[in-house]
Length: 207
Image 1 (tube, rainbow, N blue to C red):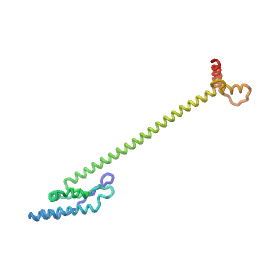
Image 2: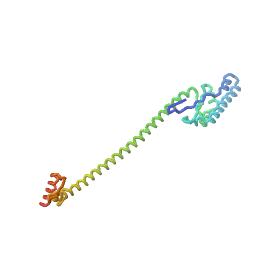
Image 3: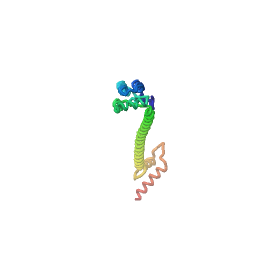
Image 4: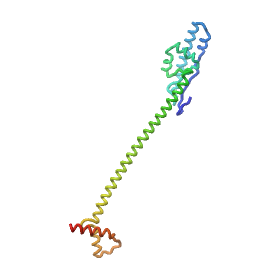
C-alpha cells in the first residue's frame, strides 16, 4: 500500500487459519485445546518467517510489517491462547492486525505522515526565513557602509574644493592672477568660481 511521498505500508495476509478451522469444527475439549495450540504455533511460525524476510528494511517502508489476520474470532482466539503473542510479534517488528483495527491503524498512519510532512514544511519555511533575514541584515549593513563611504567622500570632496577656492592664495585665485599676467589659455574658469575665491580672500584679509 502506497502513502504520501511514495512511502509504503507492507501488509501480509497469508497467515494460515487451518488449525483455527479445525478448532471450530470439533466439539471435543481436548481437540480444541490441541488445535488452539496449533493455531498459536502457526501464527508464531508465520511471524518468525515474516521477520526473517526483512520487508521492513525496504526503502521508504515503515520499520514494521502489518500481519493481517482476516478473522476476528481467529485473532481473539490466538490472543486468548497466548496473551504474550502480540508482544512476541512486536519484538520482531510485526504488528498483528485484525479487521477491527486495520483500517483505524492505516488512517492513523496517514494522519501521522501528513503531520510529518507539515512539520517538514514548517522547518523548511523557518530555514528559508532565517536565511532571508540574514541576507537582509547583510544588505542593510552594506547599505549603511555605502552611506558612510559616501559621507566620507563628500567630506573629502568639500575639503579638496576648499583648497581650490578658499583661504589666502587659494589655487583658483593664484590661477586667475597668473592668467591676468598674460597667460594665453584655451579654457576659462567660471566667473562664479573666480568671484567666490576673490571674495573669500578679501574677507580673510579684512579679518
